[in-house]
Image 1: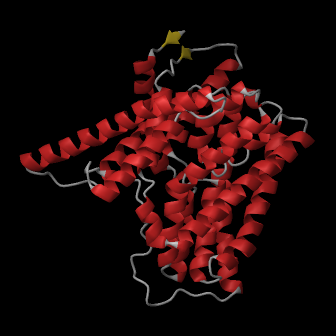
Image 2: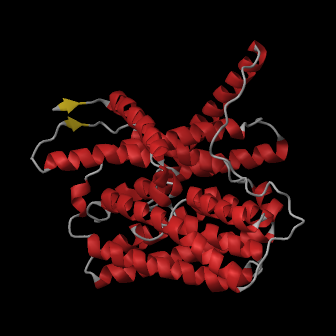
Image 3: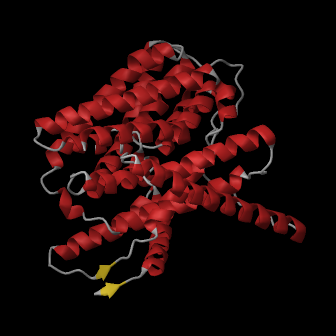
Length: 406
């Protein structure tokens, strides 16, 4: 058996992360459904280990010690993105959209708990197959998996992956048809006065290549990157004290909560006084690199054989949850968001990130605007809520359910 230490495990994860990107480029279907490259790479290893298990052979063992700090670093970056000034840009629409998403996240957990009890499973099984993986996606599901395991959910990490992956596919498949039906049935059209740049996401998770810079500019960029890295580390350090303090109160919380809160405080102080000169571009780059490495390492060590016997509960739960999300979009959300073209496009994005990820939401919304025209308001509201605001409220919701049912 080959035994890898923590550094070698992350290095191996990096190689399979690159492999995931290469495979996605070669298979357009994976890009169409916005399947994350870390998930592709990590699943390659998990499936190989599952195959080896059939022969009672374990070829490799990973040390996933660095998985935790990588995960905390990503969610710290999410905290830095939680700027109150962003709420002012979209105003009431953003607050309303966030409220609707948070309310549905609670419903997802309640429905999950009811269905879990019907199948004779622990109530928290319904939470991990509810907002933890549907609203939260694979990152949130894998981050909370240890807490669910401690609370008695067997194979929590494997369940989280399976449910999150299925949700990503459903979010991509369902979102556009539902919005198309609403647009055609209600004869909704894009106002011609909107700018033609609406198709570009308001929040970009990718960085385009840049031309070579002069030495001085390079030094400035290197310093900005270093400063971003230091601020993330500082927030993680201070956040650890906060998380430990909250833990002493008897609350079951994910380890990233403190760091995410510190990041949000630093960001808003900087927005108000300009003391720190934060580079959000640098923070986003570091955060997303950490997310990719966290996911691929977590999935490499996944025990897929633990899903045995859970296929039916997962399928029933996904069917019911999908129907609820669609019904929610067709009536209260569409009506409250204005019952116009932008509201219909927002509904497609809502389905995308309430069942999958923000990447699904953006892909679905972009496909609609390419056909029907720009949707300025939708591309402002949906990414801001789906990319990070919902992570805050969802973490609180999941934590509340865990502490109630543990």
